[in-house]
Length: 140
Image (cartoon, rainbow, N blue to C red):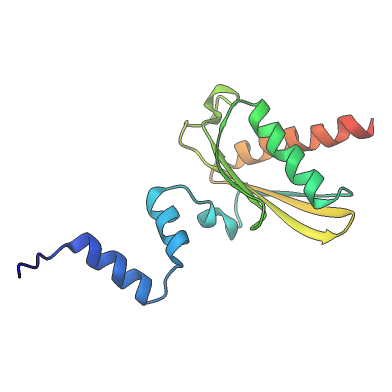
């Protein structure tokens, strides 16, 4: 029996057993398709509270991002987040790889808090303004 040592397999197995991440979070993080690195970031975070139910808020925010023709790489309604990149076509002060995380906090049946986070503070503020304008257009 010929057994070969595979360092990548050993790393994955070790990481899973020491409990640093669930298998799905580990794989998503490894592949770069996660916004968990932005979830707890304090700087570059812009927030608003809206008197809108969560499902409607999530759907409209997602629509705003898709209308901007950016790449939405995470749509996770269960974990209340959206991840997007490639804003360079609509926002001149960023790289295409700059990521934005949009996080939703369910307040009650009729209100939701939205946090938009990015390492590019101006981009996060720009995205939140775009999302808010979608809701203000309905109210006006």
